[in-house]
Image 1 (cartoon, rainbow, N blue to C red):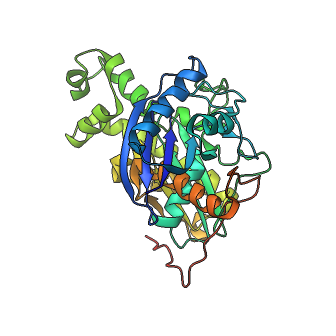
Image 2: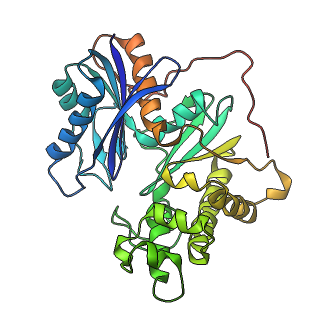
Length: 343
């Protein structure tokens, strides 16, 4: 049986999966991302290893690649990736040559947004914002059932909105970006800064070495009732709400979906985010404030969306290049869509 494979390329990992017609992940393979300062070939070797492993010798119909970076309007190149070595690389063509099959390239948050609209928490919404929180912050925007990519193909880079002038330096080279205050990195930075200044379970979990502290450790400590860990989530959640208020003011979405690894904390993150949104959104008392809900597809959303977009494009554009060509993603209309339930 020929396979449709989705690949999610993030700042720390490559996750590949075989995805069926219903958006279900059949099996996965994972490899580490070698880092942003290495030769791009090492990164693409990791992609190749993950795809080869998950295909397990079966023929591949097409591959959807969700990249944590700025993808050009033609869907050919990754122009810039804060956490990866791609800089204007013709990723699609090179990987098509490697794999001998058609590849669709899109931003990872666009792919996750598409997956949540097709199969998850945003299903049925006319307008939805999906924010993915991992190493940094990504974002995708669905308008009238289409992925809105913008003129350059780079819409949705919400994580690099400046929220603090002259604030924390970001991996993108600028200062005060939203993701420096609300992301996995921000969560760990907050927690590390408190180790040694007050009693905390975090010190035990990292063996007294703050540089070894990880996000899952902070989550574990928060579940155990550790005050510092809970303060870290409260801070990151509050900054999340402040940024969401800006997005709600700009796009007036029907719902906001929070995905990515940090979202695994659930209401420990989302409750302060909802409070921050209500406090920061202009005219909140005079409008329906969009519900802030956790994504349903978890860490596999990016690869599910990429595979689904690739399959749809393959059927419409076979047999060669899979590209959205600067236009919104393809749409499958559904009769009587289910509306998103408001809180």
